[in-house]
Image 1: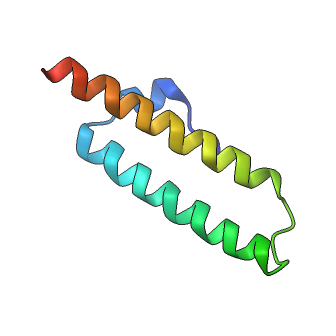
Image 2: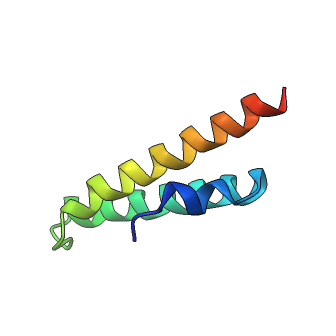
Length: 67
């Protein structure tokens, strides 16, 4: 599930933004499942948080390179 940085760098800005939104939705759902006791793999929260950060970092790099 973990997103590789080299794979993310090949995506366009729109695709990266969509991927970030998708990961944020997954993170939200995982947080809800954790709070209701339905999430068995709690390490998923950390993985999703890191993936969101990875996407945001690459988005920032690409947006900075455009200017």
